[in-house]
Image (tube, rainbow, N blue to C red; front, side, top):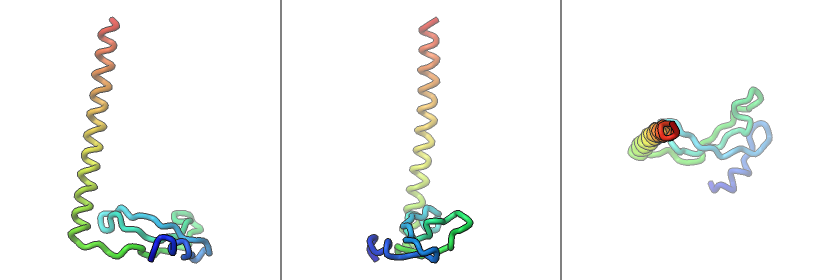
Length: 96
């Protein structure tokens, strides 16, 4: 199924579905078709996988890479905070 065909699919609400991406550990980066009203009380609950299931090896690799990216992002934020504090202290010290 091509992406263009996804817009020809309608949910039980009668509106075209959205192509979304799952980021769970069980289905990282796996795309699915879902009701545009997902999350609201009026949603019909339409759901269909767009991509085939991943192999166990691919799933483990993607989850591992996502953890690494999150770890690096966290470390970068901490380092940035340290630099801001150091620069602020240096600036305050120099202006005394």
